[in-house]
Length: 327
Ligand code: NAP
Ligand code: GDD
Image (cartoon, rainbow, N blue to C red):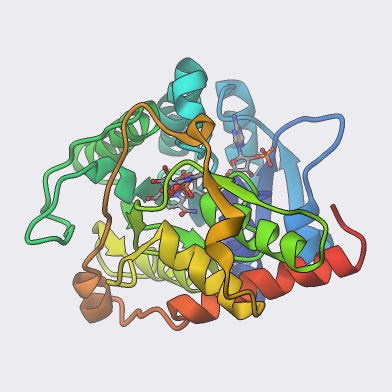
């Protein structure tokens, strides 16, 4: 029997990579898409999987649609990746962010509890929940959470309600606490893609300068294609457990900028970059560096793509897009 997966957030970065992986593993994949006059299928098209998926309309804001989707699809595995995922916007749209990221998770859990209680449930939790909390510079599964954005607070509610449904109802629910992961289809508002696209534009003479909120934030950046493998592995375990997924290395925004400019052969990059206060956040996370030891030991997972390779992959993809005339 083919396994059936329901993926929310299928049009996003991770949804596209996860769908590709599940299709390669011979799953039937249903992808939840929001009703729209123009469906956002660019990421699925980029990975060449759009026609192999069953897209089905629904919204994390609408319980009735989630019930319909779960009843129609009979999933064995549910991956809840949908979210308002941009931390910066969560100060501008805190109520929407909370409704989708926190309440949306609860709505989906309820639909699964009533109509597919045997389904295994993956929740896209995040290193943002740690805030500036760390133990000797690292975050582990035991590090106390101290969220510093409306996004992180909403995600922390989702984290706990997922744990609670596991404890209360014996459902197979897990939280993947993923650190930042990037790719050529990363949303252009996130810093890595903003840099890769801008550096490609500067290289081709289409732009002159790059404005960033700061250069000192440090993140543990991995490759999305590696991280979706861990999501699936978490749902194949004998017992439901939460796992951190990270590279264990941290780099600054400055490191990313420098690596991107070096990759295209522009050594005098500092003159091309300026600080734009419009991109500063009301509260900042200074450094994320996750220990994925538990995942490496129990899931047998490890990241394959290293930092410089990731930077090169993203810049090359943007160069190629721009040369083909994409915006
Ligand atoms: P993304 O590219 O921003 O994708 C978000 C997805 O959620 C899109 O498909 C979007 O649909 C969908 N969505 C938003 N609101 C929705 C709603 N009300 N109902 C249904 N779908 C909705 O995010 P990502 O980078 O792939 O991340 C996937 C998940 O992992 C998110 O939950 C994110 O918070 C979490 N996460 C990401 C990272 C990371 O570094 N990427 C790290 C930790 C956790 P549209 O295309 O229609 O907008
Ligand atoms: N976006 C952006 N734009 N970020 C900038 C800029 C800029 O111009 N300049 C500096 N930064 C800094 C941000 O302030 C932050 O400290 C860091 O670069 C990374 O920002 P983002 O790429 O927007 O990602 P994020 O870390 O806030 O959130 C991402 O990772 C989380 C996991 O830790 C998102 O994918 C979240 O959904 C995810 O949960």
